Each structure stands twice: as C-alpha cells, then as structure tokens.
Image 1 (cartoon, rainbow, N blue to C red):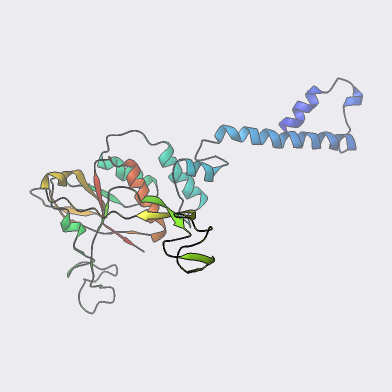
Image 2 (cartoon, one colour):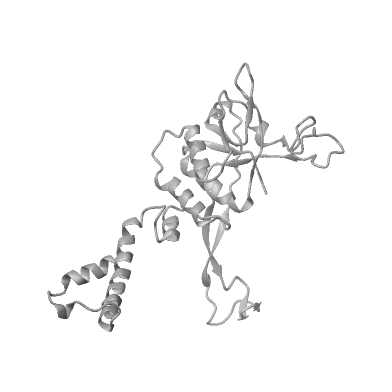
Length: 278
C-alpha cells in the first residue's frame, strides 16, 4: 500500500461502508485517487533535491546556472559528477594542487598542474616543444627512432590561457553607402529614394574577439604563470622545470577543460596548456 493510499484511508470515516472490498470498483477508485496524489507528492518531494548535483531532476538547468556546457558524449553520471565538483567548490588560495584536484574531480584524470617555481622562461614549453625526441619510449615499448611505426617527427607548441573567449555584438547593416537594396541579396544603384536610411540594420550578429597574448619578456612576471599538462621532470639541483609531457584531451572537452581552469585559477595568473587534442 502506497503512502498516499494509507493517508486516504485514514481520512475516511469509520464504518463498514467506507471499507472497500479488495479489487472492487470502489477499491480501484481509491487506488486511482491515491496514485494521482502520489504523482504530485513525488514531484513536490523531488524539489528538495533540485539543487543536488546527484539527484536534481533539472540537470540541464543546474548546469546552465553554473556555466557548465557538458561534453557531447558525456553520460548522465559523468555530467552529475562534474557538476558536483563546481557546486561544492570552496573558496581557496588558488594553490596549484587545488586546481589539479578540481580538474581530476571534473573527469580529467592523470592531468598535472605545475607551478613555475623556480621560475623559468615559459617560451621553453609554449613556443617550441617536440612531440617526442630520439630515445623516448614509445607506447609499444620500443625507443623512438627512424623506422618505428609509432614514431612521429613533429614540433608543436603549447596554448596560453588567460581569460575566456570575448564576444561583441555588431549591427547587421542592410543598407551601406552608395548601394540600394532591391531584393534580399541584391544591392545596386547609388543611394536615393525615400526608403534609404543611413545606418539601417535588421539585427545583430555576435563575433568573437580574438586577443593574442604575448609571453612577458620581463622575467619578474614568470612566477605568475603555471602549466597544465602531463608529468614533468625538474632539475634535481635547482628544482626548475625541464620537461613537461603532453596531456591528451578529447577535442569535444576542450571548452569544458578551459572553463574549469578559468574558474579555479587566480585572476592574476596565466596558464600554459601543454595539451594535444584527439
């Protein structure tokens, strides 16, 4: 017996008349009323979990509220796990280990965050790097050398992450100087006539503003940069970064990866992504 039917029975008056025989039409009527009430009750009950990443019935709406765009192939369980990492994040000091843990909680396993301390020139990793060098161990177990099927001779660079994408709205002009619109796609004749207005437009279009950041020449800024990639090797004596391996990331998760870093990194810091997309 459902809770709603039990509540309904308790509200009925005492007496044999109000006690229906099992499977009778009266019993079925009460079951229908109870089922209808139970549906409403369950919807209202789910509102208690509307802010819970694990149980919310409005997963897509909650993702939008936290600025999360789920990966195309992500399962519901993965989406809930990544959303939970954002909802229950705590204000921190911007430490590199916190950023690393949040990236891994969001599903980017085996990723590393490396502080540039002691500071070295970021150009070493961002402007010029190699996919592999002679002597590296290939996935099949052989050394990287000419003739190996898995060996790839390739020079690549990193990616500098400072801010999110910037957009601007610009008018979509329908009439331009020295032209006249005589059909949706045809502009002819000099400006003339009562139907021509300077600055006439029929809406806006959104354009992304690309900003190319330059790595600071002044070495005093280098400690404010960090790197996100695979495992790294540091100098045994000085502790300086000498090599950072590339982290392989599915291309459909690129935006999510960048947004996660931007949410948790300090505003003043710049990130160097040592990443290849598959």
